Image (cartoon, rainbow, N blue to C red):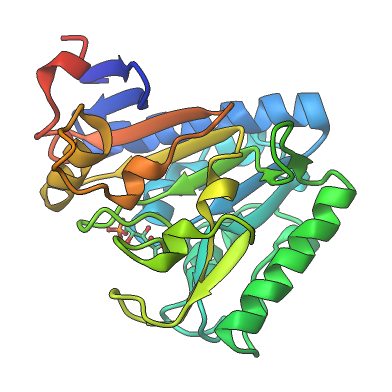
Length: 266
Ligand SMILES: O=C(O)[C@H](O)[C@@H](O)[C@H](O)[C@H](O)COP(=O)(O)O
């Protein structure tokens, strides 16, 4: 690792010299959490996002992880999904299926994707209902401090505008406190209709990892992590603050290029 650090309340920072190094560290991290969760609970409930994240998780399909990870115990969810057919090029399900899930022995019935044949509002309701059933049977754990599901790991990307999952800057969805899953029909990033985990669900997870590469994200990384003034914009990524869980940032050098030195162990 090029640099590492820990901001006092913004989690652990893992900054990598190369994308290859980041990919290996991310695969190790996911594999370790999977092992710990299977040991403790017998299952691993993981939520994915779309974007470059899936490609960056690619090493999990290779040796040794493809053989050492207990794939049969994985339950897969999406922290956000575009409301399009599962076969559509914009589908986060399709991205993960093609890039990851079809390459490892995941149990098909453990893959919890959205209902793609209904409206965004119905898809959000259906997804929340499905997750509620899995919380009842403790496939997904439950938070000790809220009634929210406690995913073992939620993986997020970061947009250049500071969005995470489908929670966009200044969008009312950021204020949702009751629902676990909400929907939007006006996403500034196409396609417009999406469902997304709400902040209470993200912040109830045992582990949240934000995976960010490239210079276009550097300003958002700075606004999400550094001690900024009250006049700076409050971007969605800064609202990712797991209450009891652990937050880890996987960054490449370009994404980390605007971070203040004081956050890094040089
Ligand atoms: O549905 C989506 O649009 C994604 O889930 C989105 O939240 C993504 O994670 C970020 O936009 C970062 O994407 P990149 O890593 O590709 O820039």
